[in-house]
Length: 270
Image (cartoon, rainbow, N blue to C red):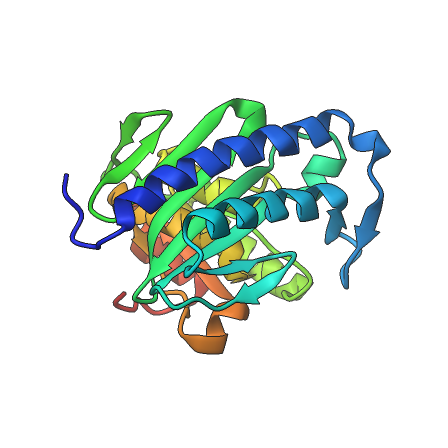
C-alpha cells in the first residue's frame, strides 16, 4: 500500500529495525540485571537504570544517522526539535520496575508523529519475542500477522487493563476499579502501560485506561490500536503539551462507551 505521507514507509522500516536492535540490547541488560545500578525518581516505584539510558541513546543515534532533521522525544533524554515534520517518541524500557525485578512485562516503545498524530507505532517485547508494528494506512501486525479487533467483545466478556502512578490518588484508583467491577468487567495490570495497550491492539485486552500517562508511554500503542480498528482518546501532542502527561484510554469498538463511563470521560473526536 502506498502511503500518502512522504517518508513514512522508510521511517516505518527503520523503526522496526531499531526496535529489534534495542530489544536485543535491553534483553542483554535484563539477563544481567543484578549488576545494574538502579536509581529512584520522584516516586519510589519509578526507577531508572543505565539500561534505560543506553537503550535510548542507541535508538536516538540510529534515528539521527538516518533522519538528522527529525525531532525526538525520549523519557530519559528529553525533547530535541526537528525540521522535517516528523518527531520520534521513545520509551527505551517501559516497565522498568518489572525489568529490574526479573519479570518479563516490559517493552521498547517507538512512535513517530506527523502533523501531531501518531503515524507509526512499534513495540518490541523481547522476553516474549513479539514485535507489534503499525503505520497509518498500513494496518497493524504482531510478528507479521494482521491484527483486527472483534467489535462484538465488551468489558463483560473480556479483560480490561488498568494503570496508575503517583499522579493518581488511591481514592481515584479505587473508584475506577469499583466502577469497572460494578459494570461487570474485570481487570489486570502488568506494570507496562505500553505493553498493555499493545495487548488491546492484539485483542488480548478489550481496553486500557490510565488517568495519567506520558507521550512516550502511549503513542506507539495508540497507532497500533487505531490501525487494528480500535478507538483512542485524543492525546495532546501540540507544542509543550507533548512533554506533559494526560489521560489515556484505548478500547475495542464494543467497549468504548462502557470504559468512558468507568473513566468518567466524554467521547472526543480525534
